[in-house]
Amino acid sequence: MTDIYQNDQLFLQNIFPYLIAEMDRYYGINNPFNGGKVIEREHIYSAQTPKKQMKVLITTFWDYPFIGGLQNYITSLKTGLENLGHSVDVIAPNHFPSDEMEALRDYFSKKFTYFFTERYGSCNDKILHNISKLYSYYTMLENMNLAQYDIIHAQDRYTANVMGVLNHALQKPLLFTPHGFMTHNRLKFNLIEKGSVEEIYFSAIDKQAIKYANQIIILCDVFRPILMDIGASENKMTTVYTGIEFGGGTIKKESKNKTVITCVARLRPRKGHKYLFKALARLKDKLENVEVRIVGDGEMKKKLKKLVRKLKLKNVSFLGSREDIPELLSESDIFVLPTTSDTLPISIIEAMLSNQAILTTNCGGIPEIIKNHYSGLIVEPANSKQLAEKLLFLLENKTARSELASNAKEFAFQHLTVSKMSQKIEVIYQSLL
Image (tube, rainbow, N blue to C red; front, top):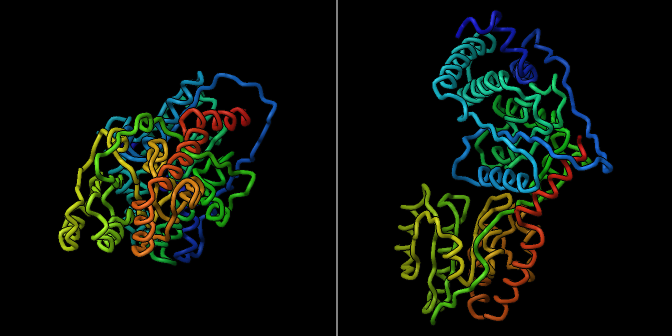
């Protein structure tokens, strides 16, 4: 492996030079690396471009296929574009031989450990892990025939950086879709310390992803101010809501003498299950003919079950991970997602297409697709009192449930299908050719 690059230090500095330059500034290096010329891709829009069949490359830094919202999005986009007559490939790190990727990561980890220690006197583990994976992915992609593609669509900031470097010579239209709020959220939830070298490093990746992209496709408008704060311009961003294909919503099964409440979400702290349970505890005497189904699995399972026992909520059932979500939602009357941090949850869209009365929170892009008192009810995150009040309203008002569900379903079929999403993204692609 050591004979791949004749000058290791020059290679380590020159592939992603802006990362080394930012860290040099942070550590106060006397003769900092200048980082080379930063190239920002111009947005070229041509509404008159005739439609053509395209060969599209979708790239991700994470394993694919896999279970998760990002992976589902990629699958939906690939399917939708192929249905429109385009050819689509997906590339992820796990598509390359695992032994080769592992050897590369080990190689770069050793090289950067020495490089950082010699240059800065220390080596940050999170940065080391990330940059080693960046360089490994770059090395494997460098040997691919990327010139065959008309469009490159990066699904995360890391891949946008890798493809941005490789695209210097190709000059292909490069698009970037962030699926989370990146360093902004890490700082918000204290996953990164403000003013740390980690903030400097990951912020540089965020900013460069924006500079490399011809166009940024955002999942909801809530991304706009966050991305503008780190350099994105309005004309470089286009909102395209996530679309899904879902089997629910066709036939509603009436539950005899009971109302079914369903929550579909990973059992993680930010999904807010504990606030739902506390809200239910406030309504104990109103839940005689109510069944609450908790669908999903995760690290909070034991704690949440313990909380349910403590609150003596006898009508709550944990169903675990399920493959029959459409069937479960066809038996449900009310869908609750008490999330405290989200972008645009797929489970909300599934509920909309399944004709559910939806109760959720004012998080991320949710209010963009759920209009309060029209297509659902919105409460503030982490507010079990509000949650209880709105839940009681839905339990006692079947007509209101029906109206909210109908409006949500109509909006979803108009805006949140794979077909609609793919058609909008196709137009963006075509405008860049």
